[in-house]
Length: 224
Ligand SMILES: Nc1ncnc2c1ncn2[C@@H]1O[C@H](COP(=O)(O)OP(=O)(O)OP(=O)(O)O)[C@@H](O)[C@H]1O
Image (cartoon, rainbow, N blue to C red; front, side):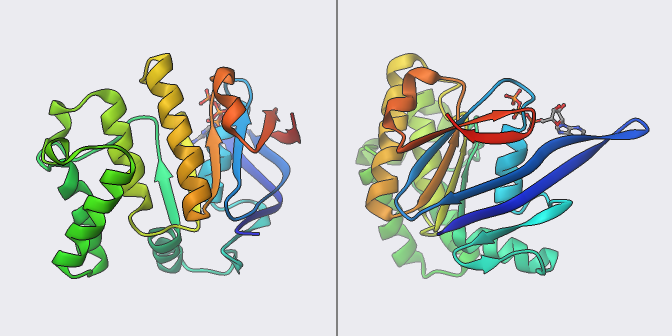
């Protein structure tokens, strides 16, 4: 399995007590599998993604990414693992206003120490793959639609060839058709790149694209 959470419990401080956001959660996602997580507001979905991304450390239980148990890793080692193995797509695209679509991806290559030319070629190939034509690849975020910005966001998350792709409400800023296209794209890249993908969504109309649907309720994860 590419992403494995085993018996994960996470609590937050809550006044004098603690609130259990994840309650003995176990999840296995295979390479090329597209898992969707639904559930009411406050049920723990974003916390699940943050733990899977190693941004939060569980109170108990383990998270393994690409076969590597992350429990014993230092903060720096976790940051490296995240950079190299985990793609993260949040609700808002969080693109850098001054950079063109292509440059958003090239900047990731620069941070990784890739050669500029290789980075440019990879950026172009990924943006082509998510359906952004050459002219739009030269535009800055404010010159693109919400759906196009989310496509750039997905292409950027794929730049490092992640084993795991974590996606939080990717369609919340989009109308139904654009949202459906973004989810179709996620299903396609999951199959093509063999990523273990987990998508949190409120939009049950989009679940047909997922290989598996899980429900989160009160911090517990069950098959839908
Ligand atoms: N930093 C925090 N400190 C304390 N409690 C938190 C913190 N973050 C989240 N919580 C609480 O943990 C629970 C789970 O929150 P989480 O954001 O994971 O839910 P969610 O299912 O993603 O909700 P939504 O669908 O509204 O985004 C909620 O009760 C929330 O209030």
